[in-house]
Each structure stands twice: as structure tokens, then as C-alpha cells.
Length: 431
Image (cartoon, rainbow, N blue to C red; front, side, top):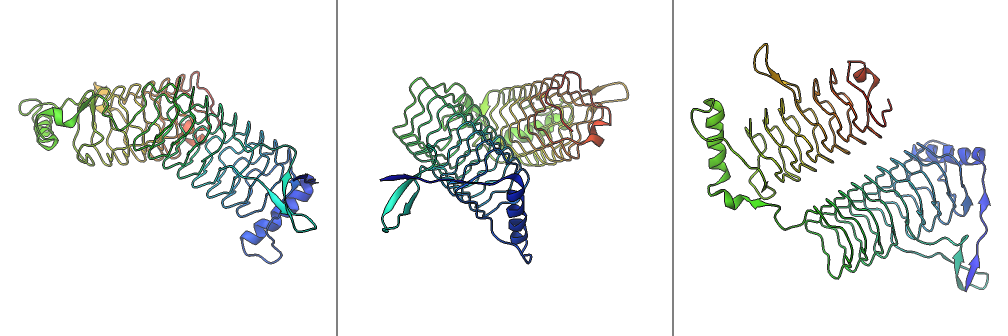
């Protein structure tokens, strides 16, 4: 049998008191107590930025509540109503979201690492000791219409979940369990599903354009009418390293000789159209003036690499590590650099003499969720680039061209912008 459970309505003042005591509890202060908000009606209330890790929200209603930036790690959100809730940039690491309703919720950039979003139902004992299913205002267990773009769902469990027409654009879903999940019409554009288990999942009509599906298990996955154009799988994209005819090490040696002699010796290296995912490590390599138009360098370790004046137009560098790299004068037009690590890279102009220099060109590049913190972008061309949710803290932005760029959710500093960056037609800029 099913019984309806009434919810206890709290106002903002009552909720603030409970949350303050919970934060005291989290900091081991006298008078603190774990927040028990089970079966409470908290719809429309403000919990933004609060520390609610390990709090109890079982069966609660948080419909339309503001939880942006909140810390909900290991919290119990079993069968919680989160419809239209704002969970943007919230931390939900290892959170129990079984049976929760996320219909229309905003989870842009949220961290759901190892969260449990499987189906679930509430039951409790009645006076006679019998278990009865609990119905709370007809709450379906689903994430239909939710916005999880850019969210971190690494190792999350969504087996059996329903997420029809849900937006997972550029989300990180490595190792995610999606067994028998219903995700018809969902948007996985640019989503990283490396090593995910999609066995028996219903992805009919889903958009998987540019998604990463390397190592994914897709036994009996339903993909009728799905758009998989540009999806990255275990199959090579273009030519493979074996087709070079010689070892990459030998070719690199020739390239270094060519660079060092100004073209008098050796041979320039051209890797255009090659899939380099299984190539030897290129960390700290000298790739000055390399040509690799449309090459696939997804996830490669390029730490400390030298790419001065290199041409990497339309290259795929998603998830690649380029920390401490020398990229002066590089050409990365329309390159894919989503989730790339570019901390402390040098993207200043490459100066030839007092009259000639070549600026780094990243016009039209996709840098969503990229980490550029501490980098020098002095004079770089980022016109038309998509830098949504990118980390630009500590960057040198003197004369950086952001014309018509997208900066929705990007981390910027007022001090850096005061250096004289070009901001004509920028979309989404907030300091």
C-alpha cells in the first residue's frame, strides 16, 4: 500500500537557524547539531553557498530553492524534490540522490563526483510494523529537462535513471554508470563519457555530437536516430602514427634539427590529420613551428611543451595538459580545448625583431571549462572564442582581444580587466 506523507513547512528564518547549527556541527563547535530537514518543505528558500555536507534532506521538498554554490557532499537527498532548483556550481560529491526529482533543475558546473542518482522509493513502517510506500506530492524519480551542462559526473551512478531531454553538454561523465538509463533526446554534445557503462541505455534521438566515447561499454545500447557526428571513439580519427613510416622520435629529432638550423638541416614535422592519442609522450618536447591542422591530441600530456608559432587549427586538445607550456605565437584557431589544463602557459606574441611579431591566435576556439589560471594572454587573439566557465584568475590580459567572445560563468578578476583587455561585444561577462 501507499500512504501520503505531509511535509513540515519552514520559513527562511527557521531554516537559517538549522543551517547555522549544522555549520557549527561541521566545525566541531559547541551547540552545533546535524541538520535534519527530512520531510520538510523548503521550496523557494535560499541555501546558496552554505555548508550542508552530510545533512539529511530525505523526502524534503526543495522545489525552486537556491542551492547555488552550496556544499552538499555526502548529504542524504534520497527522494528529494529538486524540481527547478538552482544547484549551479554546487558540490554534490558522493551525495545520495536516489529517487530524487531533478526535473528542470539547474546543475551547470556542479560537481557530482561518485554521486548516486539511481532510481529509488521511500518506505516506512506504519503503527502495525508493516512497510508502506511513501508518496510525497507525486514525485517521479527523474532528471527530465535538467541542465547538467559542464557538470562533473565522474563515477556517478545513474543506472535506471530517467533523464529525457536533459542537457549534459560538455559534462564530464568518465566511468559513469548509465546501465538501462532512459535518456531519449538528451544532449551529450561534447560530453566526456570515457569508460562509461551505457549497457542497455535508451539514447534514441540523443545528440552525441563531439562526445568522447573511448572505452565506453555500449552493449545493447539503443541509438536509433541519435546524432553521433564527430563522436570520439576507440576507432582512429584520420591517420595513425604507424602511417608516418618512421618512428615519431626520429621525426622529432629531424624537426629539432630543422628548427635549430633555420631550415638548413632536417625536415619540418607535419602531423596534420593524425590521431596522436597512442603516440609516445610529448611532454617537454620541442614542437616549435609544428604543423598539426585538424590533429587529434585528446587528453595528451603536453606539460612544458614548446609550441612557438605552431599551427594547430581545428585540432582536438580537449582534456590535454599544457601547463607551463611555451605557446607564444601559436595558431589555435577553432581548436577544441574544453577542460584543457593550460595553467601558467605563455601565450604572448612571438617577437622576431623590433618590427615583427606574431600574436597567439585562439579566435573561435572552444575553451569551455579550461583552466588558464596564471597564464599570460598578453596580446592574444580570443575573438569569438567560447570561454564559458573557464578559469582566468591571475592571467595577464593586457591588450587581450575578447571581441565577441563568450564568457558566461568564467572566473575573472577586475584587476586583470583593468589592464586594458578588448571587450567589444563580449557575452556573459561578470566580474
